[in-house]
Image (cartoon, rainbow, N blue to C red; front, side):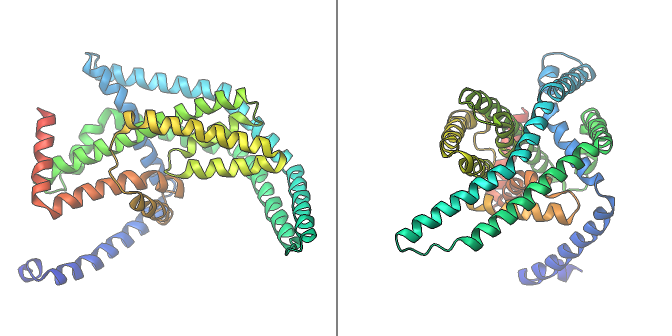
Length: 363
């Protein structure tokens, strides 16, 4: 055993990689049959991370722990209830109107393709877009049908959604009340010298990242709601909330803005350009002015690593039963934590510097 532990580096890596693969396979075999409960546990833990921020602020000002948690939970439930009464019915109504309007938009897109074909043929250019038009219309019709069926299934699964929401809320409250004891129990499995660094890195990264992203999503959604309402953009509330929610995933909001602009440009090119300019304008204000103040350099990843971590996170979420969306949400902060810990492991000076920084913060 000692020869294996202190053998050449190639031997240690050669043994570590198969063991890691075997452990991941066993973990997957354990988690997949339990779906969707692993995803619910992770969602509850993320919500507890977010709710613990105002609860800590209240405790630091002398409020008892249980009272601070109770107050924060009541405020959060009240905000969700208010949104469910006022915002959700409006979103459902606009989504239903959008689905009903899609067939007319498909006909407009077909007419646009015909005009483009006539323009190309009059100038002697290749203009046989018949197959393209048919394929686009077929795919778009199928997408509209899937959207309508998905909406009906969501509305019909209200009982299951309500039960899962209650489970998540109850788990989040338990995590808030017993988070420190749970963390202490899990940290005991780590080497003693690594415990402060691992706990501080994970806590700081996840709490800061998700708190900043949720705040940015809310600010962006409210700002775009106001701008879209002033510009009288059709389905403005729906599109504003959709763009704001996709802000939680890096680069997804830009793709959503382009998709929404193209969708509206089929019916009215002026409206498509207006929503493109307005959404990117509000987004740039939020990213350049507000985001640096909220998040700073919490993630610390290069754009290339962000792009790599997102598909890996989505695939991992699908494989381990957490869900693709939850995998995308966890990919960036998890990759940031791994980078920080690997840097500390690879360079002893970084490790000592990180420990000194943690001790200074605690003092």
